[in-house]
Image 1 (tube, protein in one colour):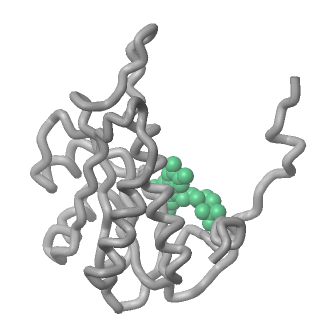
Image 2: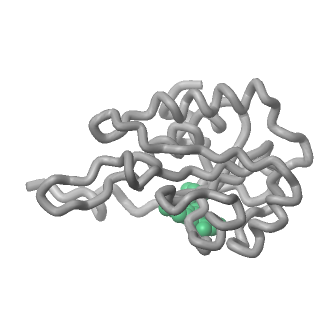
Image 3: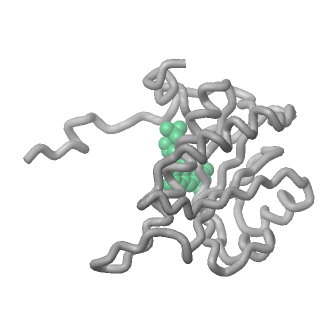
Length: 166
Ligand SMILES: Cc1cc2nc3c(=O)[nH]c(=O)nc-3n(C[C@H](O)[C@H](O)[C@H](O)COP(=O)(O)O)c2cc1C
């Protein structure tokens, strides 16, 4: 699939078919994440693949947005490994995670699968449920799978209202 077709086709999927994502597809998608650029190429991202139904059930304590996905990718960054900008110390790990997540989301779209970016969750509780150490920060959850229904993405503003030329 052509890149522009892929970004047109991506939409936030909130209902998935029963069919599980195969190991082969999952590995291809994770590879797409691995190819993402990161600040200084520090590669602070960590991706937790949650397939255990009992863990997915427990994650529902931390977020309403697991939908009915059989697989959830939890994109984190290691705060000890991410690039912190020299002049103000801002941690750019979330930026790295966002690019990693986006490359995976677009890879899924190109393969006829779908996902939804989920950031509305209780971060500390989710970390405890997953048994992750304190230096990992959960940035994005991606419930993934085959869409029950293929939908258009939400409407966007006009280009004129978001672009500022100087
Ligand atoms: C950073 C980010 C966080 C989001 N968090 C959630 C979320 O917690 N729950 C949810 O249902 N959708 C979430 N979304 C999905 C957005 O609502 C969706 O992308 C937006 O409405 C545009 O729709 P579209 O993705 O179909 O184009 C999130 C999207 C982004 C980019």
